[in-house]
Length: 224
Length: 156
Image 1 (tube, rainbow over the protein chains, first blue to last red):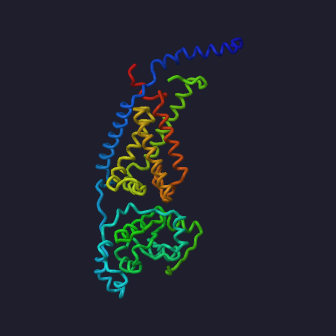
Image 2: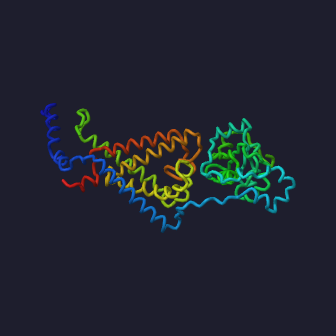
Image 3: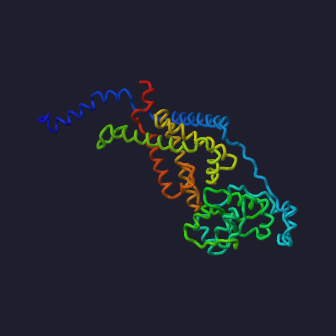
């Protein structure tokens, strides 16, 4: 073995390449790349997966509805007529007469812009936006963004008659938030408000946890 | 394909094989948390704001299973090129979707590997998906990889 030297090793390597490995490689030559074949394979795999997925969804207990249901629209006029409206004297005058444009079908809720923490802080600093806390009143009392109004989104129909008159300007920037990315109350709220004709509703998706973690000003109690 | 003289023969197929296995494993793993969670996943898809509302449930139902089967096919080397093409397309779409949302300063969950809220979107996420895309392209254009079903099935 020792006497083989460099030439010997080279010879051995060549030998290997021509040996059993090489014959195996010959038996399995490179698979030629043919685009139509590749596309057909991909399409087949896609179709198979899609059909399987649809059947799975059909028979799976937690399957979802594939048709999109239009969100139930709540019109300002209905709220105005609701019995609770009479309990808040003067609030009807605070709202400009409902214009057809304001009640026109809102853009889809899923076009809601999302705000990052810095975006929310920017609006907070400029005091340009109205902050809405979509969490429950208890959570709001424990702590909220200063200036934010308590607008519990789960009770939108109940809360709206009190809250909407306080925000008559439909062109005002509105920032909705709740307790972070695991919660969709802010999205619900923003969707409902958009349906009501508010044009600049944004969702601060990081919400309360992110705000608090960043060490930004907070306030507790019922004062906004 | 003529192997370049500096790379020892055998290394290239090994690298390609690794790419294929990694891509398959990644996609398979990524699909697991989403299977059966269509409702939650549809919300994540919705958050990306790139699909029209009518397509969101469909995508939420199909994408996890597409990832699942594509991942398996890649790992086994069955219909390798088709699977690698799908993988690459998926990664390209994900990268673009992530980049678009990132550029808009949208704060959202990635929903890439798990549907937990902890998985935040960042520039690294986009870079990672582009890395995955490279794996997919390697698996797509590799002349041959080891231990793949395609080679075994292929008629001599």
